[in-house]
Amino acid sequence: MLMNKAIVLVALITAACSAQAHEKGDFIVRAGLANVSPDASSSALVLDGAAIGGSEADVDDNTQLGLTFTYMLSDNWALDVLASTPFKHDISADTGALGLGTIDAGETTHLPPTVSLLYFPADSSSSFQPYLGLGLNYTIFFDEDVDAQLEGVLGRGKLDLENSLGVALQAGFDYNLSDQLLLNAGVFWIDIDTDADFKFANNRIKTDVEIDPLVYMVTLGWRF
Ligand code: NI
Image: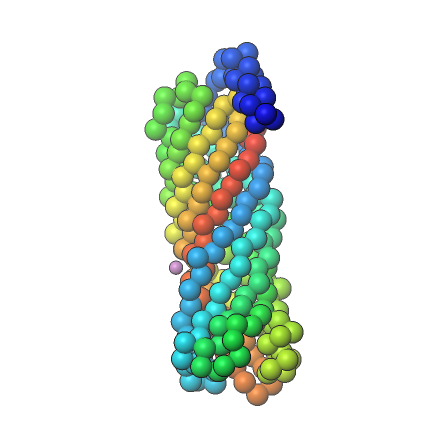
């Protein structure tokens, strides 16, 4: 019922304001929810130089405030910057042949700033503006911590994750509700790869982790 009312409301707003669409020189700011959903895989954990059979690291998902800034270079091409509040992820490890099962290994915070070129194929007068984008991501990891569960096995430790530079693909749409206001939904695929390095007093664990997340965004946008 609420959904029906919302749809009617959107239709009324759309009818009331002949929606002006994406044109050269427009600047669009969008704010909303961004969910980073890793499709993580890793090399086997290497403990003091020896690979542990059947072991693997994994990374869970997280939702934060996402912001995008888009500048229309022409009616069809735009420059886009993705920003967000820091994402926080738990890192778990399947210990494989070590026989400890799956344990909490650590946690990290990261920021994934991404710059993309967007292509809007629709006519600039259309209210519905789908787009495709290709860009570059730089993911900065910080506040890495070894989880208490792993420290219970190996003693106090320190975790370092290497920053990642990679390609970002995106697809989504803007739906213009009025001259100023728009709805947006989009998804990014970002190639984020890192080396995880756990250091303990007497041991060291290393693994290469492919995080390669999908980032889902639902935002409200404002055109200037
Ligand atoms: Ni990758």
